[in-house]
Image 1 (cartoon, rainbow, N blue to C red):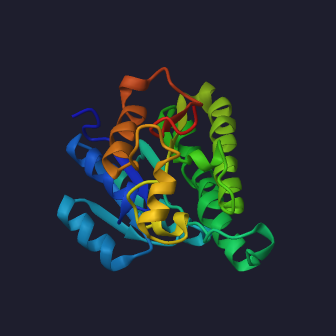
Image 2 (image 1 turned 90 degrees about the vertical axis):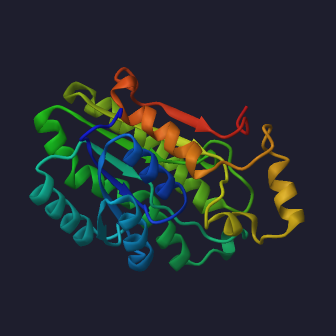
Length: 246
């Protein structure tokens, strides 16, 4: 029960890594507000975990503001924010990525972190406690070809994590990130540009431990970084990548 009674917001919580993190946090005693744009799936998953939920698009400021209003009204304070929501474009040369695709990637992957800072950090600074966890990617450390602007958005998140950590340390607010390798999530097919055995083998060949990451892997790593066990850890990018970035 390492997160007993901690109030945690997890974005992109209805599937993939977000669902795995939500499950682990529930097991560790946290009170969750699970956030996703997929209302049907979010209701189903939150019900299975007996947790609260809030349907919203985290790429829009008005929606994030409404989320903050809801959470503070019902829970008073927020102990943890996990910025997990993320999207990608399909593998393609950078000049062929449309402006609409580019904007979607950066609005969801990057701007949502900005909104977290705008609407949740002020209260954390005031009470001098809180944890922010950003779900980055090995793509931000060792970019893959043709995932150009997705790579860049995750690189932005990694730098944002360090910038937030150094600025918020005097207020006792910790900020870290996990950098997973491609995982067993709905985004895997998009990353690979298909779901054939050949493409899977090619992807796996770049991971020394020889397997994709799982939602459970992310839940375990996230739990450590958001618990008091890591009270001396801030500004860290924890690779959960099976050795890909060695």
